[in-house]
Length: 422
Image (tube, rainbow, N blue to C red; front, side, top):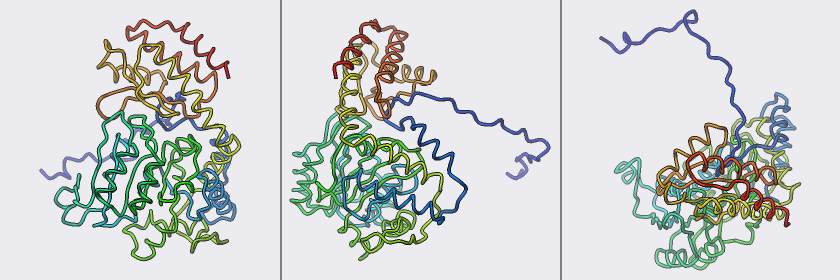
C-alpha cells in the first residue's frame, strides 16, 4: 500500500477547530526570559499596522540604535538590533568567522557551549563538517572547558591565548547555565596582548551589570538579547555592537550569510560606511510592533538608569541568596540576577520534580540544563520588595511540600529586615 493511501484526507467539514489559545500569567523567576513590563506590551498592542519602511517605524529604529549605544556604553556606529532572540544576535557576531579561522573558545556552561558549537560550525571546512555534521571538531578551533560552577578567569584566558595565538577568541560575560560571572577585563587584556579579536556573549549581562564596552577595545564584537536585561518581548531585537576592525574585515572578505550579515543588517538601521545616514536601505521585513515594544523597553531601562539598576540587582540578589541559604540550600553562583544552587543533601535527585511542581503552579523556575542538575531562580524585572517576598514565599512552600523543614515566617522576616536596611 502506498504512503499516500495511509493518509486520512481532512476536509473543512470534518475538521474540528481548536479553541482560542489562552496562556495564563506566570511568575517568570528563572534565568530568562523575564516578565515583560506592561508598558512594553502596551506599546506592542498600540502600534498601528504599518510596513517596515514607514517613516515612524524607521524613526523608531533610529532612536533605538541611539539608545542602544547608551545602554552598551559605546560610540560605535555599528550598534543595532538583529531580529529575533539572543541566538540571532550571536549568529550575527559569529558570521565574520570563516572556515579555517583560528579560534579559542571558553566554555563554562550550557550556553557558552552552544556558542562554541556555532563557532565550530562556522570555522569548519566542508570536509570537517561532513565528517561529523552535528558536532564538527575543526582543528583550528580550540575549546577550553572550564568545570561547571567555576568562572573563566584571567589566568585561564591568558594561558590559552599565549599558547594558541588565535585570530578570534570567544567568552560569555555571564554564563546562565551555571550562574557564573567571567573575567571580562582579563579577556580584553589577553586579547589585546596576543592580537586576538574578542567576541563576547553579553546576553545575561547587558542591562543588568553596568559596564561600557568602549572600556574593552580588544573585544571587537558584542551580542545580547531582548528578553533578559533589556526586558522587551522575547522576539523583538537582539542588540549587537561590532567595531570597525570587524566591519572592515567583512568588507574585505565577506561572510556566508544574508540574514545576519552585519553590514547589510546595519543599513536598515540607517548605518552605512561607519556613520549614521538618513535613509534606511531595505534588508528584510521589520515589524512595527516589534520596533515599538523594543523602543519602549530601551526607554524604560534608560529611565531607570543603568547604574541604579545594576545596584538594585546586586542588592535584591543578596536578599534572595540569603533566603535560599537559610532553607539549607548551597548557592554556587555569583551572578547578580540569578541564584543557582544545590538542594540539601537529603533531597538530592529531586531537583526536576520540585521545579516541575513549581511550574505547574505558575512559578516558573528552572533546573540547570547540564549535569550536575541544580535549581535556578532569577529576579529579572522583579526588583521590588513585594516581588522578592513572593518568590521566596513560593519557594519556601515548595520546599515544605517536598518534606523539608523550613521556617517560612522567620525567613520572610529576615528577608524584610534586610530589604528595609537600605
